[in-house]
Length: 142
Image (tube, rainbow, N blue to C red):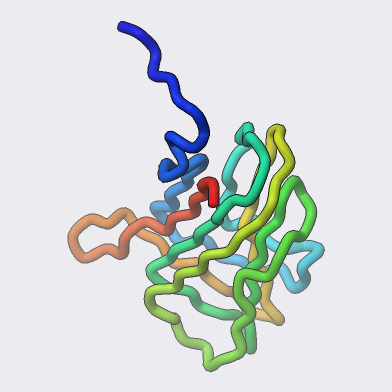
């Protein structure tokens, strides 16, 4: 059997990194500096260039007044995913898509969350009968 060969362009539609969460993740950190890691991609080796990052969850619940989600690259804040200021209810069907540029090399991306007070939740489940589906985080070339 011979190996599969191709260029990055040949595989541009494939996910470069993927994480599935089968259980909800609570977060109660109260600042960006101490934000709770909700999902991690990597470490993954990249060719460098622009990448699309996506985060999906069956629900998102804020803390007492608000919740914020952020994308971090290699332990450094990259961009805000979501800042929420609503009643303390679950938001069904949360989804976000963003873009970032990476240099060639090994990288780790994390989605992190924090609240003003109380506890926020990134919803996820097993997808079994009567259960919410997995939360997903993925990265692919743009």
